[in-house]
Length: 377
Image (cartoon, rainbow, N blue to C red):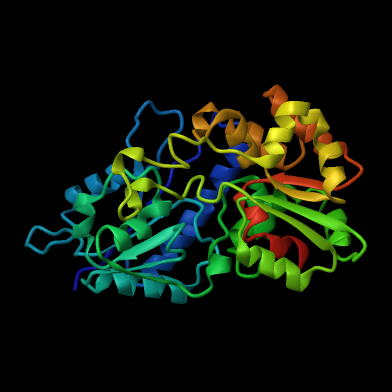
């Protein structure tokens, strides 16, 4: 039986990358090396292919790239011309850094099955997906990202999708330097990434203050952004403080009408053409300005963990091309306002950095699967 192909989409770091962007690139490079060995041991044939470069003028979507890959590799559908067999495992750089060898074996076994089955870390917002028969991908629409792939497979292609065990751990990604600092607190992270976080002195801002807040039953914590019921259940059972929970714009990146049965395929991705992304906190900041962040949070709670990508989507739309640069966003997460070029985001980070109550900005991980590692372990 031919080895199934394991594709890792990865854009290598460049010499001219600014500091935090370069750090993330090195972290992902180390993770790719680790995962190459992991999947090779599990029996896969690993190919590291260029990821989508944000500086490129190419507008090829994830779905279009995957269709092209399947055709070029002659994957699925049988025939003597197949280069790598009928199945496929696909993931992006930074995904599932806590994947174990057992998990890699399960993914490779699914890709080796030849059947209409798939295995993912999350059927609704995937970071890694194995498919037994890749021929169904020849009909894949131009999905904007890999997150919606299992949903399309299940709802549009009739493929049976199951999930890997350990969904919470496997939801941790390395998408920002703050994610690296968070992941370094979790047992099972590859040692090379843990060393990198230590060598670069990447730490979680206001962590001690947030943990003290969480342990105090007289105080209240605001968690706002792309979070869900699993995080709320964990908070209710594991912190002593009161929790004010505001879940907004879940599926900002993971949702695509192209993946949903019965949806109008012309609508594309995101919250839909008739309703742009909106955030309750973002609406208040739009009225009062980013300088009011601490005052607004202080009226609601004694500290906060905030998904600032929802705030940016509220202000500038869902397309990240219109947002401040990745370097600016990463500096904001680490409360380093002096390194931020965008005036609005710099003001927001400066307020959070000097606020008398702890405010931690970040992306999806800090308000979702990372909360338990921030506050409880």
